Image 1 (cartoon, rainbow, N blue to C red):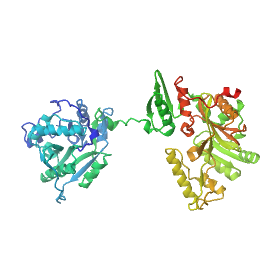
Image 2: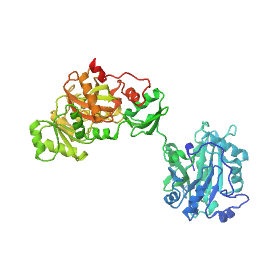
Image 3: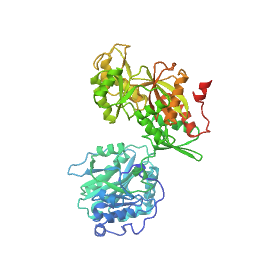
Image 4: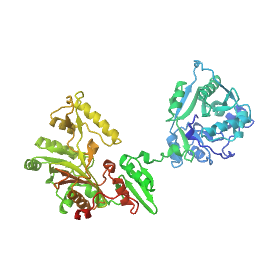
Amino acid sequence: MAAAARHHRAGRVSEPTEAITLSLHDASPQHLVDAMANNVELELGWGRLIFGQTFADPVELAEALRREGPGRRDICIYARESHVLVAMAPHELFIDPSHTYRLRFTDDQPQPAKAPVGFEVRTLNSAGDADAMNRVYVRCGMVPAPSDVIWDNHTTAGAVDYLVATRVDDGTVIGTVTGVDHELLFADPEQGSSLWTLAVDPAANLPGVGESLTRTLGDIYRERGRAYLDLSVAHDNAAAIALYEKLGFARVPVLAVKRKNAINESLFTPVPETVDDLNPYSRIIADEALRRGIRVEVIDAETGEMRLSNGGRSVITRESLSEYTSAVAMSRCDDKRLTRRIVSEAGVVVPRGRLATFDEGDHEFLAEVGDVVVKPTRGEQGKGITVGISGPDELDAALARAREQHPQVLIEQRAAGEDLRLVVIDGKVVAAALRLPAEVIGTGKHTVLELIEAQSRRRSAATGGESVIPLDEVTEGTVKDGGWSYDDVLPEGVRLRVRRTANLHQGGTIHDVTADVNPELCRVAVTAAEAIGIPVTGIDLLVPDVAGEEYVFIEANERPGLANHEPQPTAAAFVDFLFPGQPGLAPAWTPAQAQD
């Protein structure tokens, strides 16, 4: 039917064989009806049209499709049960992702069409027209048909109608369409007809060629007393769909089935993903690898999974997570309670804490330490974490939120300071940054809610959708604690924190402090990473001052976002780790520097 160019590929097709070619020579329409009422396969040169409604047995219909020859593009339309047909050979057949549109012929006369300007529509005059049709097919990237098949169908088979559009000035063929009369072909009880391979030379530069070819073919079948004209169009071909709907076509629930072959590959196989489909956290790594001549194969862009290869070395990564991070190290990072114990045994300072028992013991701990943080023992992106809890009702609500993420919940004494992220790669700190909670700045004109929504849009745009400010009870409670409500207009210049945690996925921002961080804090980060046994990690500390030595350990992230730390050479250090010996940049801090 009216196929998009990507549904066809140029190339010489094999000559039709007697086993699949209907003999249309020297046949009258009535003879065709008698000969082809059952299991009808119509040879059109580029492939066969297989009319599924003429097959009583889906097994025979599947076998007919499986007989497709090399370089061919067979199409089965009107199968009685398309899903059953595909089930007969699921590894070979698929349902075409196209829509069927139908123009129903009624007693009402169609709207008069505008007269073509610069071209005319006619039927074939000579075998040379068949050659010209093929030239148009090739220019449109479609599969051509042997010219003798086209000419034989035209001269001997009343069921097949070919039209061409030609320039008035020089007679050049610039468009073509094929029609099939179902009544003449197999005594169709519905008296239908169909339109196939509508093609217009992309260099024609004359408007309305496709519309005129379609209208003319429709007029032919209307005059013959046919009930309708069907065509198939790619589901995403918006321009063609708009044309057909303009002409009065409407969608009908008719499916087409095709065979999985090289010509149809794009229809049943996802388009290969490229580095352009990656999120910023994987893209920064891919770009660094490509810069060094390392091959990058995108396995799953949505998750950031890639295969990096150089020489005989091949490594699969998922953002900054690689095969070299063991499952044991990942499980240690995943379980915050286990992480606390491991780093504490290595001499790293952790805040006081307890595993929630969801009883009076939790309230007694809160009363003892005065201010707590509640977090699920497992989870990421700050989900379920509540900071700054000082009352029993707040504690119960925070425990419930955390429990929604994981059954086990950790309660920790809240330490003063700001959130410092230290990126450790292969025993070296390569970047340090303060992560600040989301905040808005008043304009004197907009409400707090409007400011939050605007800031959330900006953060989302800047991070490829990775960072947004949730409009949940935590945000509303944080705003309330600041002395405001969503509906208040925040005075110009007034800063208001709207989240308590500094998580970047929840609208937080990051500020590089690599040049200012105290070497002792870097030593702590490397010690924690070595204790966990993880080669690439983001160590989070709470610090009153990045230049000082005071801290408490918060957690370790097995997949730190390297893109958040530009212009620090995090991606370079990661690729250095994966492919030792490749040219790279010097790290910011190593344990040896502590001795200088």
